[in-house]
Image 1 (tube, rainbow, N blue to C red):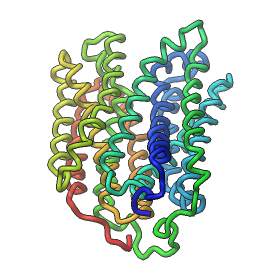
Image 2 (tube, rainbow, N blue to C red; image 1 turned 30 degrees about the horizontal axis):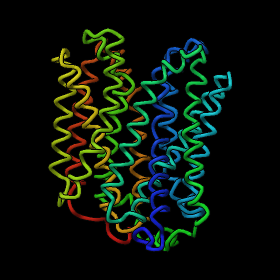
Image 3 (tube, rainbow, N blue to C red; image 1 turned 120 degrees about the vertical axis):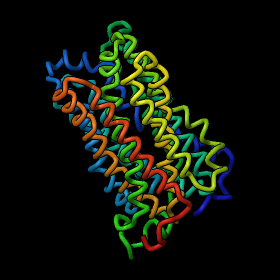
Image 4 (spheres, rainbow, N blue to C red; image 1 turned 90 degrees about the horizontal axis):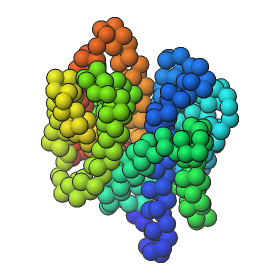
Length: 398
């Protein structure tokens, strides 16, 4: 099945696309949303800084561990059921936030991470299978959905927690309503479910994906982008406060960074389809990210420009990297394998980033080395984005 089935009605096609966008809506907000209420979580459970930091790191580690397993799950259960399982896990994890126990909070966060990992790996494969000629459009659309839902949730979380004193636990768990709606919308895909196509289930593999240079180019492009993006998600408010902004301004700019990461989903839709390859675009975005990271250090008064532009660059490179997974592969099985590899390595780097950045700050008592680290990571990301952006594909036996 290389494109949407010709027997599929317009209504069922719309339901499929809506289902994909709703799955995407669950792939970021449940973990980034904890940031705005982290101080309340610390006060509730008397956590240390390192224990609180684990709430950010834990889902990223779950991504890295669970990502390679998602391909195996898809081979056994099919893409539709596997994505349904991902939503169930995210919903279960969100529901545990109603329980007044720090152990359950950690456990639920890990479960959410596993669910998101499955969705992250398999959604590009589904798009490769059902929207082969609309990969750029669908990838941009679902990344846009991720950013809009996550940014809106972060912006609404504090007022929601304060509304009639419902508290941070109910506010965090409330995202489960979106997950529940997503499960309902996805149900028709299970009804018409068939076994995955032959190229997704064939048992023999002549070459391992990890042995191919282009696979590493795509992986390191996504990985280095995740590295500096999650450093910014974790520490941007602190960086801005050191640059002379008050806590409220820093919080607004942190939200602007996340919202800006969703904008490329609109802009790249018409652009990607017109490009023969993505080399210059990837390198240009990475250089711009380099400039913005150093701008935060040397010209902090223009922090709004640097923060929003850096968020835009991070989101755009993420879309490019996800597009590479489909554009550099021949079939759904290969796309799922490359997606698993890229997200396993990528989220290991993402998990290391905030901890390493925190250690650098503690050692130098300054955020300057961290911003230089982010700038250099952006440049390296551009190098691998340039190599991954060439109009070539993996060998068919990979």
